Length: 284
Ligand SMILES: Nc1nc2c(ncn2[C@@H]2O[C@H](COP(=O)(O)OP(=O)(O)O)[C@@H](O)[C@H]2O)c(=O)[nH]1
Ligand SMILES: [Mg+2]
Image (cartoon, protein in one colour):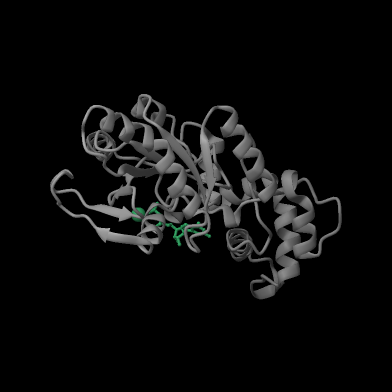
């Protein structure tokens, strides 16, 4: 993605991947954390390869920011592929109960097999995987809020690993797996930038906003019209649209010229704060 000028360091990736592979061996279930606003763009196809048939559950985080209609459609889409899905808001903790119970159910068969082999029953073990900023730490912290005890370094649990005991039957690895976003697709890069998955200093906000405005005009034009008190239909041209919004919001420089940069940042902020409503950019 030379447009967005994004550079990922293969050294870090290789090391992170090696650690993740080692950790994956310790768990029964993987929680794949996706951004509910961009369930496709926030996924990394390396997951499938990495997991090699390990039971996995999809958690659609930041569901509080996503369009509920489309969240339903995404859930159906994943269910049709035989995947369990839980929508989450890791800030309020909404959905975490359902997540814990689904993970326990999914891992129970593994624990059951151990019992059948004469091994003592143990808690289901799980870990969280996801791209930066998707909410891995927030989810772990929220789950910690309901934990019974930290189970660091206790016998029967791999030494040197921090496990968080959640409820009676679940242990969560304290270190989430960090996947890098996949940028080969230009469109994916834009969507990651819009939702804040990648840092602002590594992309060109001008290009990102041209793209975002055309996406919003196509998918949610009525929201723009309402929020910025614009006439329908909206202009085709993104700069023209920016001009209108800048005028409405008084984003002006000296001499009465539109301050485009200020206007862009205003729209982006309002989008991310749901002042423009709840958005889902990816469609199944
Ligand atoms: N609205 C909303 N924000 C969230 C949610 N989960 C995380 N965040 C925010 O997303 C940002 C990144 O979260 P963080 O847990 O650090 O992501 P990590 O990089 O995957 O560990 C932070 O600003 C969080 O407050 C959520 O479910 N809803
Ligand atoms: Mg984190």
